[in-house]
Image (cartoon, one colour):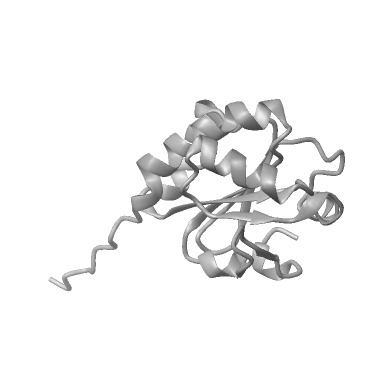
Amino acid sequence: VRNAWEMPPLALPDLQGENHRLYDWHGKVILLNFWASWCGPCQIETRHLLRYHRRHAGQGLAIIGVAVDDDRRAVRNFVRTFGIRYPVLTAGSARGARLLKQWGDERQILPYSVIIGRDGHIHFSQTGIMDEESFSDHVLPLLAPVPDREEPSGR
């Protein structure tokens, strides 16, 4: 499947227990990021994600974190410690493992990110830290404004 909207709907609770669907962010460029509080590389990556969110949310970037921890308190502490302001959904380890496979991370290595265009097209997925180079190569082009088409003047 190359379009996120053709996949089984992703619906998960946030830390307050409110359910959200990935489709809630359709029309935005989505960086879907699977992580866990115990994952060292995820802790490093979070600083990058916070910077991307701060710089590009106004351009239509939606970073959606999916915590695959069983310990919701650890997730809450992680979110508070790092000052995460983007949405964080919780999956638990068993459901998280199924979701990782469904989204293309067969080996279930964290962190794992999927880049989804405004139209739902899956443009890129990556195991490991979404560093500046990957972000610049695979996300920034999707955030670029679409140029207005000039109407022929007929003259």
